[in-house]
Structure formats: C-alpha cells, structure tokens
Length: 90
Image 1 (cartoon, rainbow, N blue to C red):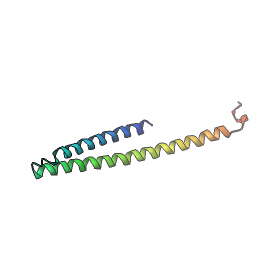
Image 2: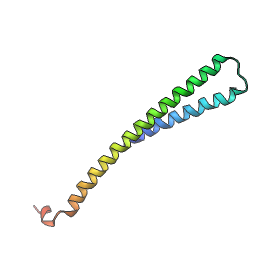
Image 3: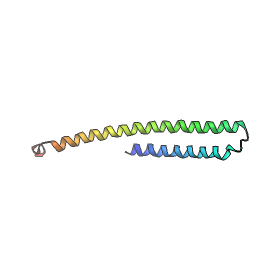
Image 4: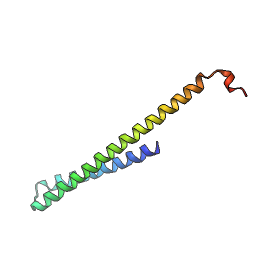
C-alpha cells in the first residue's frame, strides 16, 4: 500500500507540473515572441505528458500487484476461516 501511495503522490506531482506548463502556454499564447518559445513550450508539455503516462503505467502495475497480494491474503484467510475447529487445538 505504501508503494501505491508513493506512486499516486508521484502522479500528482506530474499532474501539477502538467498544469503549470499548460498555464505557461495559456499565458503566453497571445504573446508569441518567437518560434523558439513555442517549440520550447511544446517540448516541455510533451515531456511532462510522457512522464505522466509512464507514472500512470507504474501506478497500474502497483495496483495490480497489490490486488494480487490481497487476493492471496483473502484465500489464506478463507482457508483459516473454513478450517475445522480441531485444527486449532494443540
């Protein structure tokens, strides 16, 4: 679960970075000073999107792994809950 929280925190940071970069584009859209500026903004946003998508994939892997662990734990608990009472007597 700590792994999932860490990945979600990372994902949140990428979303914030994406939003900041998006704001830079909006703020400067009317004031295009040079082609270089536009290219730089597009590169920043593209890189942020790629990092965001990689983080989403990592989160998905982490969630799937945690789900498998939970399923395994559930199976173990079900075995213990359905075990005959004599199995618990020493």
